[in-house]
Length: 190
Ligand SMILES: Cc1cc2nc3c(=O)[nH]c(=O)nc-3n(C[C@H](O)[C@H](O)[C@H](O)COP(=O)(O)OP(=O)(O)OC[C@H]3O[C@@H](n4cnc5c(N)ncnc54)[C@H](O)[C@@H]3O)c2cc1C
Image 1 (tube, protein in one colour):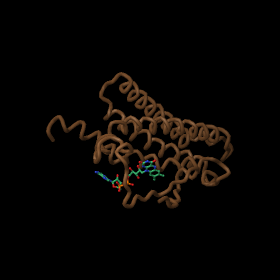
Image 2 (cartoon, helix red, strand yellow):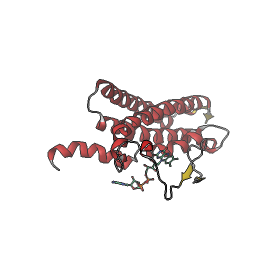
Image 3 (cartoon, protein in one colour):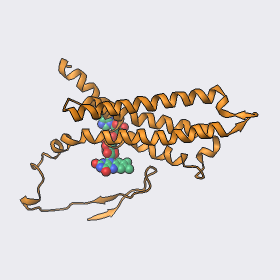
Image 4 (cartoon, helix red, strand yellow):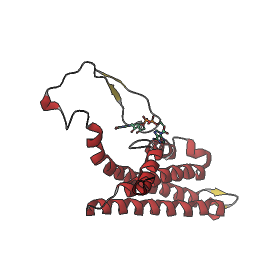
C-alpha cells in the first residue's frame, strides 16, 4: 500500500511516499541477494554514493558563494560596498577556502575509488566535511544578504533550507564520524 509521505523543509521539489508491506509474499525470482542480507548488499555501494552527496554540496556551495560575492560587491551601506568591510570580506575568504577544501577531499575520495584503493574513510570524510561546509556557506551567504536573505525574492533561503538535509541523508554526520573513527581504531583493537 502507498500512502502520502511527509512535508519536508528541505528539497520541496520532490515528494516522498510511505510504502507499507503487510503479509506480502514474493516469488524467489523477485528476491534480490540473500534473504536477511540486504544490509550487506547495501553497504557494498552505499559508501560510494556518498561521493555524489559531497559533489552536490560542493557544486551548490559554489553557486551560493557566487551570490555572496556579487551581493557584497553591489550592496552599499555607510557609503561603500559592504565588501569593503573586513567583517564581510574575511567571511567570504573563509567560504572559498572551505569550498575548495571540500572539493579536493571529494576529488581525492573519487580518485581512490577509481584506483580501487580503500576509500571508505576518505569518502565519509568528504561527505561529512562537504555537507557541513555547505551549511556554513549557505548560512553565511544568508547573513551577508541581511534581511533580504530570508525573503524568497532571492534564492538564498532555498539554498539554506535545502542544505539542511545533506547532514542527515546518506548517513548523518554522526554516522560519518563513526565510520571514520572506527576505520582508525579497529586495526588497533580499540
Ligand atoms: C528528505 C529526506 C529524504 C530521504 N531520502 C532517502 C532516500 O531516498 N533513501 C533512503 O534510503 N533514505 C532516505 N532518507 C532517510 C535518511 O537516510 C535517514 O533519515 C538518515 O539515514 C537518518 O536516519 P534516521 O532518520 O532514522 O535517524 P536516526 O537513525 O533515528 O538518528 C537520530 C539521531 O541519532 C543519531 N544517531 C543514530 N545512531 C547513532 C550512532 N550509532 N552514533 C551516534 N549518533 C547516532 C543520528 O546521527 C541522529 O542525530 C531521507 C531522509 C530525508 C529527511
